[in-house]
Image 1 (cartoon, rainbow, N blue to C red):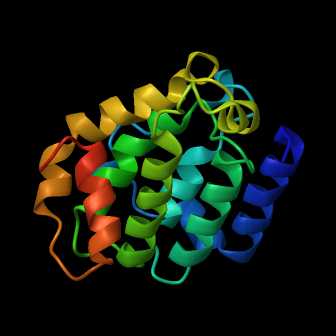
Image 2: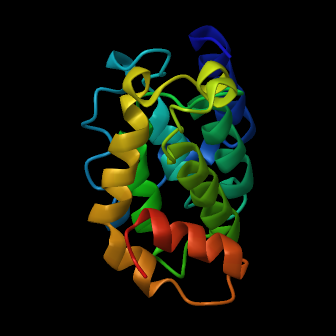
Length: 175
């Protein structure tokens, strides 16, 4: 999806959920999200905070997740801005009051999967997903998971499958 399509996705989201534009901006998990220069990242729309705030709205949360994932991922890789989005998502996942928390955790598992290093000896994988040197966002995301290991460690059991929980713990550097 190119930048124009991503911006159109966010515009449609706002048309369907206009209350998000006027929502409370005081949630501590999203502190600083408006200061990030999102549009300086390749193919990243400036309105990412709208989707992040949408994750807090009971009626908009599921669609905000879908739009955010469509904006931050392509078939074979993630947007270079993912390492900037990830701290906000992790902090939200740590809040039991966040709507659609289980869906958010499953999205974080997807980010963890995309963050795994590519085996340079596996030519097919390197050809399809590119080398790690071509995608520094993978290592950057692993570093963010590690920085927020305390959040991952405190996630209650039973919200996601044991395998998914193990993936999050592994990428965060937890046993």
